Image (cartoon, rainbow, N blue to C red; front, side, top):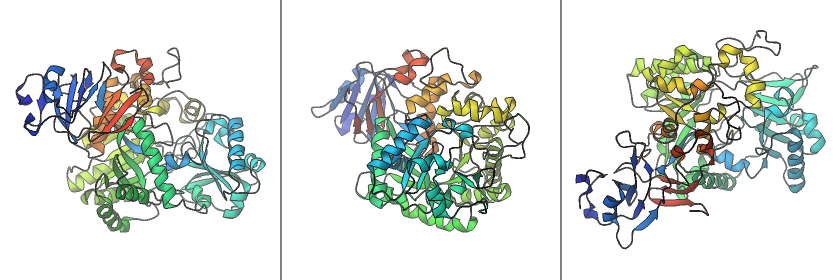
Length: 565
């Protein structure tokens, strides 16, 4: 039977190759295929989707050895893809002094004390995940840590990973005093006498972090595999690692991927973004080309380059077109940091684009977004329109004049939807220092979608949860899942519908990752699929976050099954 001739099913070929290996029946199936958004059955042969249709059509492909998954009305979707994530670091931090599940200074006190007591053999107490809003002005002090761990150095990164918290022992090891100058790409927070308080911002983190013993290859690989299990459990089948290389305060995670691939343990599809060393220039491009050639094989492709153009709004290092406000609402003399000179950035991006690299920008403030778009425009002007698919991640503040440039330049908007909600970090550490006009330009998902921009989505884990369903909930509701329906909506005009949010986290991220054979459920595409425990399209929007992943498949192979599957 040639299913391509039937009205309700399409396939890349006929059934002449024999029965399907895997069949899903009794859907719904949400295909993310604009030509046919819904079906009820899918057949898989090998690692490819063979047919998409209705039960009565696909049953013809069931043979004696075919595994049949009865969906019983549960939703089958394409695998989620995270377009901006740090899995090795996230997996490693789960095994260190992990503060990510707590919210208060008192909880951090207990967790740090317990970890130090349980690990007397550890020479450095490291980890992190603490929230800035737990401390006045987002600034914890060395004295807090000294009371808990006076005899060993402590260095704990915050949840954003743009700041580090050190105790006195760590500061002394690094030789930091009131005479130590700030690095060009960071800031040492100081008390009234100029002495370091223990809080190090952006590039200043390296002053301490470079002293921490690097994790072994085994530890890094364990972190990757721990993260892969977690991400598969959330339905993530592919991702873009936003940092391959030696970044500020971060060990290179590349060897972990190489080891996992070599041992046949890398089950996800991974696009690696090679780190752009902002202390260097175009002379590093030949090295990046060499690394791309060495690393790209199997399920790992190192075809992107990550350029961090600015910091974050909470510590006033995100690059803004106009200065931040002070606590009294007055204009300051600080407009944030552009880590790379904008003119140089245009030249670098043009050269990378000419070499076939995708450029993956960290661009959070409106000036950084504009500088990144200017660089893309320069590359288009120099090289013509190439299929390099540059994307800008984070996009917290975007000037309205720059919204239409994404579509016009073919630059993908890579959103981290979980951040687009009222939370203490937003309400206490961000909005008052942006002012009402700029605060209204934050995370403009709706405007970007209406402008025709391509949306991709990511988590930035371990900065925030890697759960795509929680991110979908916030993209649609502009409220965190814990908020009741009566809670205020953060910029309601920027909400997007569930279909568009899901497309961003599947087809949109597949586009950003250059994984064109994934992202939708269509005959001939790779069978990267996820079974949910319900159809969130059928329920109220404020219940999207209740949805859970039951099973995850990569290339037709089951890589995760919940106890309820």
